Each structure stands twice: as C-alpha cells, then as structure tokens.
Length: 121
Image 1: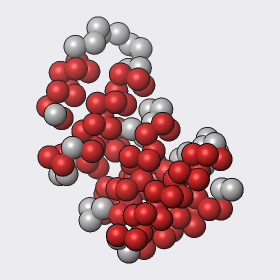
Image 2 (image 1 turned 135 degrees about the vertical axis):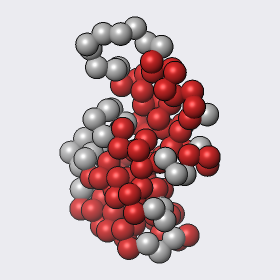
Image 3 (image 1 turned 180 degrees about the vertical axis):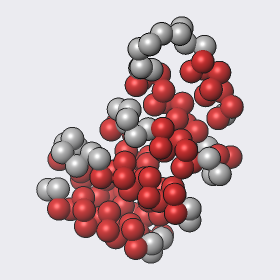
Image 4 (image 1 turned 120 degrees about the vertical axis):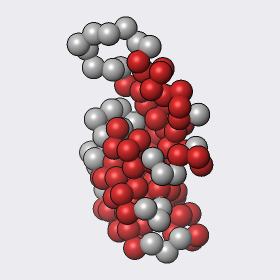
C-alpha cells in the first residue's frame, strides 16, 4: 500500500505550488494505518505536520500509545498543533479515543494527552 504513495505524488504535474493537502493527506493516513508500515510510521506522521490532517486526528491519536518513541512523540505533537482548531465535538471525540486507548495501554503519554485535551474544553 505505502509503495503507491510516492508514485501517486510524483505523477502530479511538476510546479512550484505546494502539493494540495487533499492529495497528500489521504495516502499518508492510509500508510500510517497499514500494519506493514510500522517501521516507517514516524516519517509518515512527520509528513502530515504542515498539511490539513484535522479530519483524520482520530486515526492519529491511537499512535500516541505506540511502542516507538518517535511515533508517540510525533502523534502527540500533531494532536497538540490542533489545540485552537478543533470543534467541541472533535475535542470530545479525541477525549473518547484517548480514554479507549488508555483502557488497553497505560503509556504515560496517553494520560498526558488526555489531560491536555480536557484542558481545551
């Protein structure tokens, strides 16, 4: 699956314009969620940093509890960047996703993320 990302992005017409968010975000989210990309997730998460990934935050949050430090940190940072951009409904969804993750994974960063999201209300 992730092997399709680069050719898909490269197939776009060359220009000095930045890649449109809607073109890059979907393949990156798919690659992040693909179990076969566990060794590359941090890179894919990093690639989302300057894109409009807000609609996909519920897919990113579970990786805050990942065993990879880079994946945890990047996922947390992506959530943190949305502090003033999430609607009340999105904040509630984030809170619920984190609570569910904590039930299955007691990583400290998940608890910190939950406290952070709760402070945004």
